Image (tube, rainbow, N blue to C red; front, top):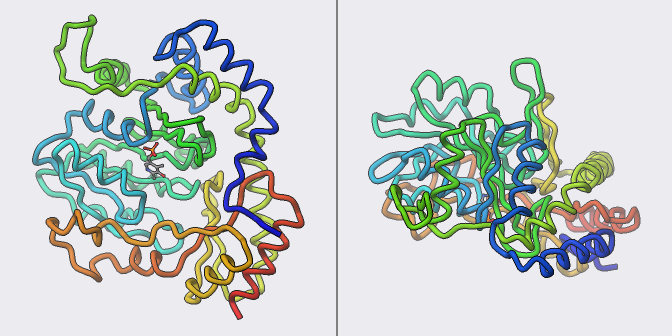
Length: 370
Ligand SMILES: *Cc1c(COP(=O)(O)O)cnc(C)c1O
């Protein structure tokens, strides 16, 4: 039995008719970039996250880039973030001319450890950029408190977390809505995936939203009059139309992922492997289901042999990337991230998995552990 890590064709079957109708509507309109469809999606995502503004852009990476630009983070500034994330998080910081400064993760949740942030703050620090990894929000209470005390911006990299929630000040708040600005990706493998690249920035701050709206069209407002130097980073109407259809299914899909996670948690509980830990104040949407074992490479080899999809997120922490040698970090500087990179693997968790497929995955993990 083949079990791919992700099977988007299974999802497509569910939405095919609606999506094709939506794409047809765009083709008939011949309005392809921004326009009413993008505007409608922006409002729907903002409402979904419980914030005032959504501003669509070309990718999740650009969402982070535009957020940094809008906050005026640039040359010589420092941004504190995690080394255990997709490259884009730190890459975007570098692209605005700022320096990513890493703080190690909590080894249980894999998210940035708030108690290691403060010692990394210098007079150059402008922002904290926590990543909500694998579908679970970072520990935002202390992060927001540190940011407030040191007058720093908080930019959430919520690319893997649309729909996740965290308990703050007695209420549940959605990912992206906790800091000054939140960044999402619509890359096809995210929980809400487009049929190509796309991203969105969300914020409650009117001024910031307006600035991102300008920056995504070269800083022109009115058109051809530039008070800012921006980028070409717009969302396509076809992507927005697809995403609007799929947004109606998102919570159902997240529930499916959560059910699958519960199944795995239970089925794997007797084995010598660590299953994901979601803290009590978090509601995970399981963009990934990540296991941990010292036998990781052996398990992966076995899963691949048995045609069960799996992947390492991420094999090389960012402080060990070749392009970041100039930052002068050493091996061992972030031991929790380094250990996670050598011991974790992601299993198929997509909502359309059948019971047989899940049982097969569990059986193959058990074999691989032996
Ligand atoms: C996917 C992802 C991004 C980047 O999104 P793109 O749309 O691929 O540019 C950024 N950060 C994290 C944590 C991601 O998972």
